[in-house]
Length: 73
Image (cartoon, rainbow, N blue to C red; front, side, top):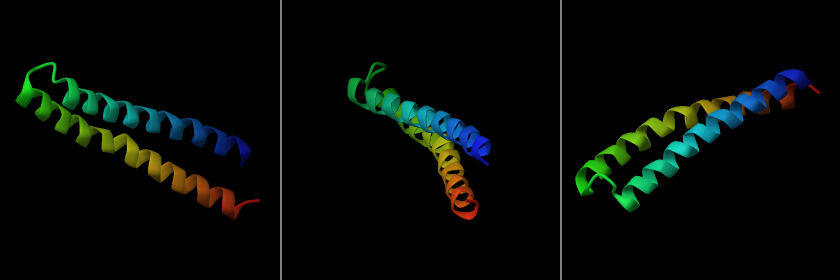
């Protein structure tokens, strides 16, 4: 069980890092606006939507990890 939790923890961290990276880039696009006002805001909105996909996977993995840790001792 420890190996399973370890692998799930690595996967969880990767998905969380990717999702947070997309969010940081989206915020940066909103603040700096490198492509002009409207294109940067549209791209930032798209990045926000894309960022929620790996964050949702991370949430589901965290839930499975918690259930596995609580069920098996």
